[in-house]
Structure formats: structure tokens, C-alpha cells
Image (cartoon, rainbow, N blue to C red; front, side, top):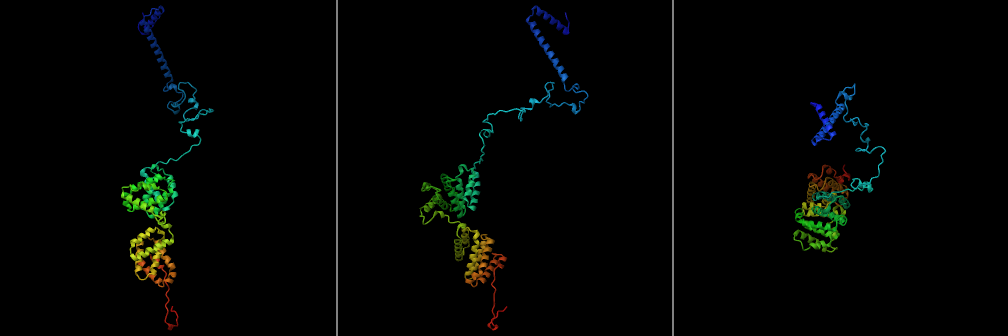
Length: 447
């Protein structure tokens, strides 16, 4: 009986309620009633939410306090404010300012003792006492080994201190290539002087048993024997020198005798066979004939002064006989005493003063000129040698009456050949000449 709008729905509801009272609902009517109830509840929820959002909207002027400008800074609401925007809560920070990231916790909070975690980076420090820090040295690669060892050996040739080399080796991590230090040292010594080879033999003897084991020494010499075909290109005498190294190493108990016996007669390389033969000859000699501790001779700085003077005299006498300047230069370099070359200058001048004729003067001037031009005798050494003769000239004149005149002529020739400086020439002492008149003058000396 009701027409249109909600009135019709209300009339239908009254009929359904009356039917419910009578208990005469059909299944279709019951499903329709439940759907209407759900739709009605949704409408009520939508209306209530829209009213709340309208009332609490931050964009409406009604939410702003009366009497304030909405465009002013004070009228704007901080969006990062922690206060509740629904009007709930007490306006306190989250968690009361405790327990956040990077904080210790609330005031008055007491922490209990926690068990250390094995996965904690500070586990060793907290549970096992003091931490021991160790320096980890990376192992040297094969390409870097030679660049690192060569400066150490070259510096050792200058100072000769085996303890310093041992200290430097302790700071390096050579790893499985430790034996190559000995082979590199021997290879450098083959290219150097006799004094360098003597120092290398001493170094191997001092490092044996401390830094280098017997097995590593054997591996080092085995490597050098295999490298002889390459070493002989730069050092033709490498096989003989290596044989002397092996004989000296066996005498110093660096290598066992079994190392030599293991290779003897079982080597195909001619150079290695020559090295082994040289070592065999040295080891078979009696100690009275040769001492292997002096197989390289004595270094220049370690020789007695009398021995050096004798060697220089012999060098000059052989030069006056043969006239070979290159041989004299070679002999002087082998002495390895550049600080003592002023003695050669002194002995050469004295030998000129004691000789007869102009041939010795010209030959000695040529020798000193070559030594001066090649830099074998420095300016300081040349000046010291001449000055020593100047100081001792009065004593030399006792044995050589014409020493002053010979000295003056020799100095003039040296200056003409640019061997000495003008200052050194002018420093030459000249003997004051006294001329006597005839007996008719009563023996008076003319002024």
C-alpha cells in the first residue's frame, strides 16, 4: 500500500517483521532481509566516517584556532610532530625516549650480565683477556723476490755486516722461495769483485743453520748449476768461480760432502762438469798447500799496508819493463784500495827520482796521465801523493843528490800534460842555489 522511496522499503520491512513474527518466512525472503541489514550497516559506517573526517580535517579553517592567520608560520601545523592527531595519548615521545637506536635506555635501567657471543667481533677482547696483535707480512711473489733481495745484497757488499742482512731477512716473508736468496747472492757475486765473493761466502756460512737450512742451500746451488749456460754469457769464468764457491761451502759445512758426490760423474752440462771438477781439485789438495778460507784472497781493505806497498812497487816495476798501461790499470783495480792510491803516486815519483835517464820520467807521466783521465786516481789522491814527496824531499836528497832538479823537471812535464794543477806545480820546493866566486875574491860569497 506504500508507494516509492524509503516508505516502500519501510512498508516491506514491516511486512517482513510481521512475517517473522508469524514464522512464515520463505528462504528468499530471509536472504533478502540479511542483505538489506548489511547494506544498512555499511551506510551508517560510511556516514559516521565522513562526519569524523570533516570535523578533524586539517585543511579546514575551523580546525585552526580562532584569531590566527592560516598563512602565518605559527598557524601551520608541524607534520613531523609526534603528538597524536586524533586527540588521544598524552603527547609523550615514543617509548619515553628509551630503547631506541643508539641510546643506552631509560634512566635508572639496570642491565644484567650477558654471556659473550662467539660471533661477536669483540669476543676475544671481552671473554679471553688481553688481545695479542701480530703483524702479518704478505708472502713475496716470485717476481718481487729479485727486486727485494738485490738491494740487500748490494748494500751488504758495502758494509759487510751479516747480522744486518739476517735482520732484514727476518722482516721478509720469502715463503717457499727462501732458497733463492742464496742463489741470487752467488749470482751477483760472480759478476762482482773477489772481495764480493769472499763476503758472499761468509754470508752463506753465517746464515746456514739460522735463516737457511742445509736443504735450502743444496737447492740454491743446484739452481745455479742449471743456470750456468746463462751466467757464462756475462761471466766467462763462472764455472771455475762456482767450483770455488762449492768447495768453500763444503769446507765451511754449509754444504754436505754428499751434495758433491751426488753430482760427480752424473752431469751432462759441460759447464756444470767444469765447476764440479774445480771443486774436486780444491777439496783434494792438502791443507798445507791451500787453505779454502782464503780461496778468494784477502779484500783490499783488509790487507796489511806493507803488503799493499809491495804490490804497488811490483806493479810499477813491471810497467817500466813491459810498458803495458792496461795491465797496470788492471792490477791496480784488483787491489781494491781506492783510498790508498796516493801511495802509488808517491812510489812512482820516488822511482823516477831514483832512476837514470828521461825514459822513466816520460813513462811515469804517461801512466799517471791515463790513471788521471780514467778517474782511477782522483784529484785528492794525486795531490796527497805529490805533497808527500814535497815533504820528504830533503831526506830523499841525501840519497839522491840531484833530487830537486829531477823533481822540478818531472813536475813541469806533469803540468804540461795536464796531470797536476798549476797550484800543485807552484808548491814544488826549489833548492836555493849559492854561487861561489873565484879564489881571488877572497872566498867571499857574492850576493
